[in-house]
Length: 90
Image: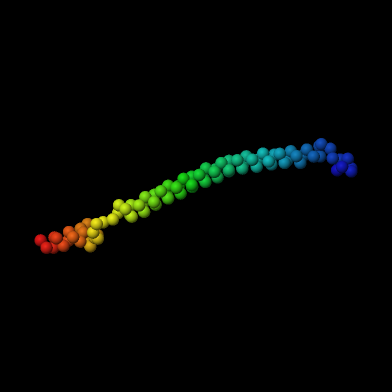
């Protein structure tokens, strides 16, 4: 281009305009995609925190509040071993 003198503005402007158009369309696609990615990433993070909190509450329930003073002999009836022995004596 430089040696032949055909490197004028008209020969370069077609490539520049094509590059600008493809850049604009690329940004039209990339910006909403990035926004959705950030939204979904934050949703997943919030859900994982909620799941961790729920599992910690469940573990705390089983470790602290879920204990029985006496073991159950027949879990379906809701009677403890002491209640069954006293009713058998009577």
